[in-house]
Image (tube, rainbow, N blue to C red; front, side, top):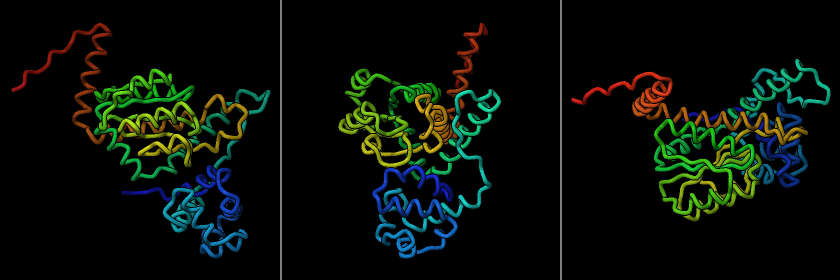
Length: 297
């Protein structure tokens, strides 16, 4: 199974403000001097950042990586990429052409960085859990609720029993009787949303499988997830228009699309039958006659 050899610098950017002081110093040194850092041992990195080799090892663990070698490989992959436009915030009085350029660039970067952070083993596990699910319950609050509704609409096409809730009380009633083959999928950009974390906690207590989709790093939502999926957040965190959930929304939708297409290709024959049935019904709604099914021999 392939795994990403990029995204090291993105992960460091995502996590640096959440790290303890010694680990943050190492992260900042690597971000400032990535070309030098990839040639260093743990001991050398500790010395150059005025910390210790033990702090370097702790940093790798905090980042969710297997060790320093994986971090250096990912950073090396980043350094081989073509220079990209940095995130640019939109200022008052911007012209329309500048807004179009900045919004497009920021959205593309969020999707690219999210893709670079994908752990393919975790992705495969998430697809397997969704494939085996009897029912999938998507939950999100605010802008993340829109993602939950989009996910429900997609997975209905695979003839999956699905629900999507944005209200905590309705969601709690819905998952009160979940079974071990059901999946509760919590969506939260920050990973800190109280309602989403609580729904995930209830689902976990009831024995359901749980999947989270959040920004990178440990959080109250991911703490109750069997499988944690991540999107890039660094392009949007500084923006004064964060409440608009612009780039992050597209990154979340992108990850839902990745899960859905993986599931479709994994069950191609069944998916083709489901899609044909849906097409027939949509044609009837457009006034076309219902196509007769062929008699089975």
